[in-house]
Length: 193
Image 1: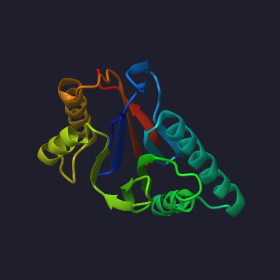
Image 2: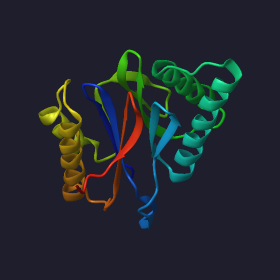
Image 3: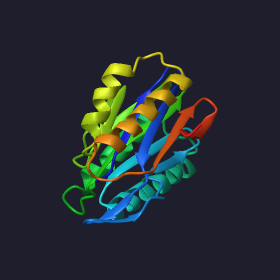
């Protein structure tokens, strides 16, 4: 029961994820980072079965790096989204990875966010979420998000999303991690400040 969300601002893309790992009715940890850094300007948030999610995120991290080493060029965010989609689609009949993802990146053309799911669907979006708590988050984003929001406004929106999940969602998700990618690279936001 993971919760991941993301949105694009004026000159950045933000991803958030809960830090809980559950097995059946038992919460195992509240310290897992479900947002993988694919390179210095791309983030991949993953949701799904803990083992598959972790393995698939790690696989994509290594394969994006391998692509760069083999070809001498980094994939764009759009190219990375399609690379991940192809990997999911090829593995769908052999060894499916039931992992839903949000890919955020910053290229020369600006920030972007992609919605990917376990069936190989890919779509460029401005706001999105995966998980059971996504209904609460999408409702908040409908009210508060705008295409030219600043980083300070984004931080406040992320706080509202996290607080809504903590208040309304039945499954306890006490810790969240928020990361931002912009022209300066990747940074982690502290929502407590």
